Length: 159
Image (cartoon, rainbow, N blue to C red; front, side):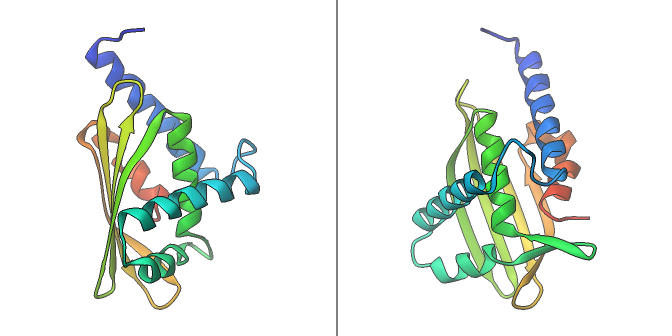
């Protein structure tokens, strides 16, 4: 099936909107703990393979809690859900770059749309708040998704 460029952008934006609604609703009945563990493992394997020599920093960072009021969730759980929904929407994880320096952790993620080969990038910058808490400082998600940046920011732990 072939779509005009404007239609494809609207479809992708609609898919991203649904994706963000899914994320904000926590775990859906669609994904069980065992399946989520598989997605967390796949994300962890990919980030470790793409960033040799940084395993300790990566594991410490991904084990941190992103607080939401009086509750929160581990960052790796959020990435597991993100990977789950990305795959459901035919987005394939291409590369993850991780940088940690002086109380900050940066993630640069490249995704490919398997239907047309289009590449999208996601940039997340976190402030490390002690040993086990992390807070989102900045987000960038490809220009195509510019209208949905606030949803992406809220999902990954921003205000």
